[in-house]
Amino acid sequence: MRAIPVLTGPTASGKSALALKLAQEYPIEIVSADASLVYRGLDIGTDKPSLQERAAVPHHLIDIVDPDEPFSVAQYLERAEEAIAEVLRRGNIPLVVGGTGYYIRTLSEGLYEIPPRDAEVQRQLERDLEQRGLEALIAELQAASPQDARRAGRNPRRVVRALEVLRRTGIPPSRFPRRKPRFSYRKAVLWPAFEALKPRLLARTARHFEQGLVEEVRRLFERYPAQPIALSAIGYKELLGYLRGEWGLEEARRRIEHNTIAYARRQYTWFRKEPGDVSFLEALGEEAWPLLREWFSASR
Image (cartoon, rainbow, N blue to C red):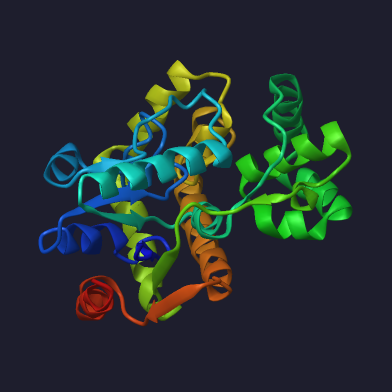
């Protein structure tokens, strides 16, 4: 079996538009590798593909759970691998697209076989996250297992999950056995110079505000006042602070811009060490099209 193609890279680098363009030439179905796109209602702040785009090109693993439903990386792996298998059975090409490095790494390298979630421990950790803050939880994980702290990064969902396993078993996730991946993968990483990407990151925030992000977050806040971890995504957590009266709207926007830039920098750090068959396409958006097309066609 040929390796499954993956298109990834930092946020705002143009992955989705390029994937849709590629689907005009090949019988592609897109398998999302974005941890926020799985949630219904998180649309503007995640740059979720429109209904028209999803009608034109089949997409998988988008809008599959509500924000207050738990969704683990193990669930992602199971559903993504099944989606890939279904696309292959139809004779089409599954193209994995997204910027959640942990999802992509799990697909290609396998997953530690850790115990299933414990709802009560999760609730306690979510209370700790709210009361003590993310830095305190990261410090707890770092003290027990620097490797797991590096893997979790500053993602609240991954930090909470790793600490849940640690608190319940006394063993960090990285010490559990790893399940082998079902498929092999070849990866194209969009790799523009950061200074070229930065204006697009700022424009992304401006576009989200123009499209109505504040009202989207207001509706989610009204529907989910307990503020589940899904709403800790960039763009949502900062506006929740505004809606709670903790800071003004301009400060929320400044925080979104700052956190978006910081997240993109972390993505560069993560993908720089991406294992396996990896090609770095040193271009941005439409400029990357010839490179992507050549990379993709070389494996067909």
